[in-house]
Length: 121
Image (cartoon, rainbow, N blue to C red):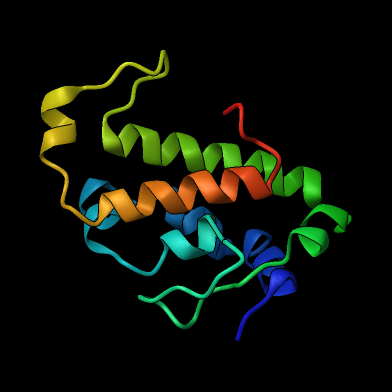
């Protein structure tokens, strides 16, 4: 199982940058990246090769500020994908075209934002 330290290693690897370059099709069809860019404290039922973090280890890590900055970038990527504009209005036609799995993704994002102390985002 992967933990908080592996999450930090991922953030500082080229894998995170690769995901940030995903196009709309890759974001919609890939089911293994979301757990890495938005880790939670519980194992994923869809990806057993993703980090399970602890809030204490996350927040006390020397690279926590960088993790928060990357979390904001990841959030911007997903909001754009979901049709959520920078003023937080929603592109309804785009939002309606999303597959059902995005509800689970959104709840994961909210949980991860809380763990990263970014609930106001």
